[in-house]
Image (cartoon, rainbow, N blue to C red; front, side, top):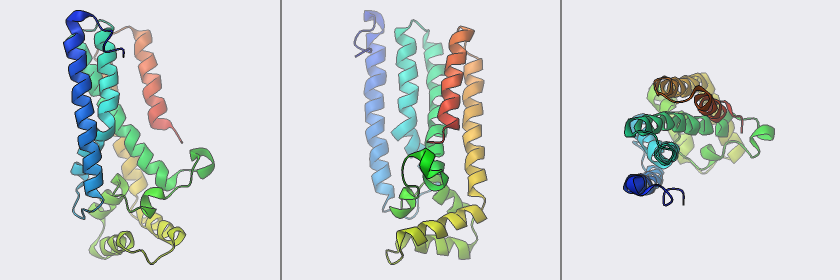
Length: 209
C-alpha cells in the first residue's frame, strides 16, 4: 500500500523491491520444505534459507520506507543491508528460544522444532562440530519416531548443551547485530531516528518471546 503511494519517480524502485522480496520469500519457504527431507544441509545453506525466508522482509521494509521517505539509493541500500543482518539475528534467536526459551515467557511449548525434526541452526551447528559418535546419536534422534517427544527433546537439548551450541548461536546473533550496527552508524541520518532503529533492533535480538 505504501509502495503504491510513493512518488511517481520512485514508484518503479519500490515496486521492484516489493516484487523481488515476494519471490525471495517463496524461494526461502521452498528451501525450508526441501530441507525437511534433506540430511545433508549445511550451515551456510540454512543461513541463505533464513535470509530469503525472513531477513529480506526486514531489509525490504526498511528500504521501501527509506525510498518513500526521500532517502538516496545508497542510504536505502545500506538500510536494507542493516535489516538483513538484524533479520538473520532475529531468526537465529527464534531458533534458540524454541529450544531453550522459558515457556512461561515464550508463550508456547518449547522443543517444537526438535519434535518436528526441523534442521535449525542449532541442529546443523551441532552436526558440524560434534564427534562421529555424537553426530550419529543426534542424527538417529532426529530420524526416529519411537521415542516420546519429551524424552527426545530432553536428549537433543542435552547434546546441544554439551556441545555449547547455545554459546555458538549467541555469538552468531551478536555478530549479526554488530554488523548491522556498523552499517547503521555509517549512514548519514538524523541521530534521533538512528536511535529508534537501534532500539528496535535491540528488541528483536534481546527478546525472550
